[in-house]
Length: 73
Figure 1 (cartoon, rainbow, N blue to C red):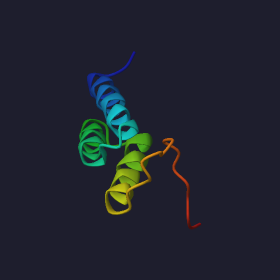
Figure 2 (figure 1 turned 180 degrees about the horizontal axis):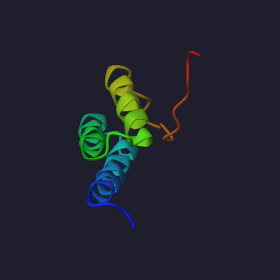
Figure 3 (figure 1 turned 30 degrees about the horizontal axis):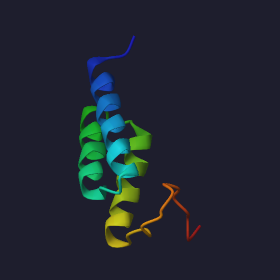
């Protein structure tokens, strides 16, 4: 059974992913950070929050397919 914190984190993550796919990175980042407040161990939210920060500074092309391509190791 999931804790209330984990359920809330999952809901926030799902909302963040929707916004991420729509290239609304600032709003998506807020959702991922809120998920981390609810569950600090949520690694996917941490990764996506970092990616959103990167895309805010380095917007993808308009025909972006949602795939994050690493440019460094």
